[in-house]
Image 1 (cartoon, rainbow, N blue to C red):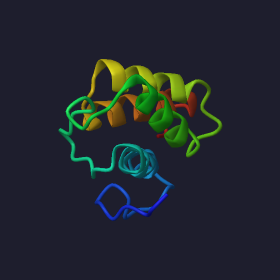
Image 2: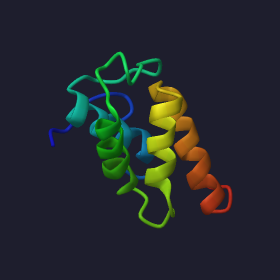
Image 3: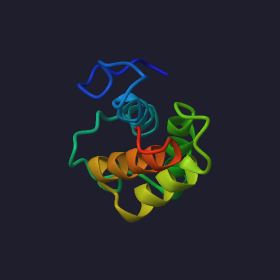
Image 4: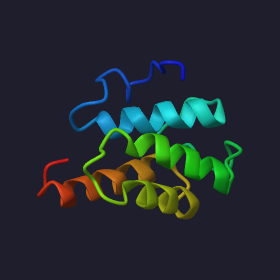
Length: 101
């Protein structure tokens, strides 16, 4: 997968922006476009299979967070906006890690 140079990925895969970086990179790799905060999953051509791929790839950044892939996939299918999916993923990580995302 190509490295994506967006503000979400410049910080690398660790820290609070790690999920955003992984999500942006997976989105780009699967959908072929760079996501913005308000990028719409469906408008970018996303399908349920794409949601599963993006969620699975993104969840690899936090292997200690149970069912993060399910949360992300559901968020992609329900929320559809990059920023909303990122926020829900960070909340899930924060809950799992005791409030530290």
